Length: 153
Picture 1 (spheres, rainbow, N blue to C red):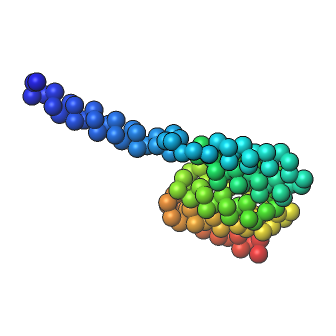
Picture 2 (cartoon, rainbow, N blue to C red):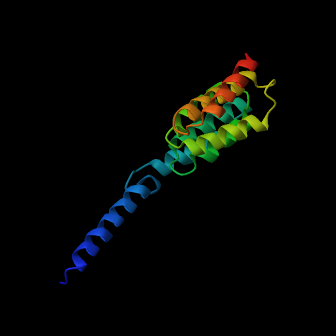
Picture 3 (spheres, rainbow, N blue to C red):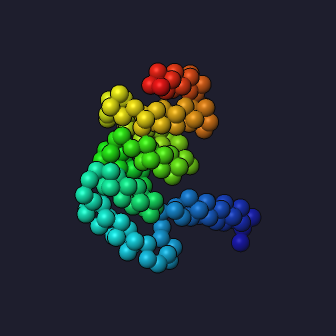
């Protein structure tokens, strides 16, 4: 074996390990029953009688989903845009993915007049303020979100 091939093998192995670590949430590594639970949750979504029940069922399905959580929370917010609980559940679940959460919250704020969904809009604005003060680091936007939240009070 030549001298240059050992570092190349080490680097390639490290790259593959990092790649596997990054895609591990997307792959079902032998978890049993996850598909069945997701089917039951989606059946509850289809059989929901009103928008509030549909939104809660969509949140339950989003909690079970590894890859479709963001889109299911968006559907839940569209089903019941006035629900503070849906906003709080989305914030709790997507807090590790600040860009996805930011996009979801902005879509929620843009989809319904703030005066019609005052409490849910306040919760979205507060979550955006926390995001901009924390992981997204934008003090100007954080202050703007705080002012907008205060106006809705």
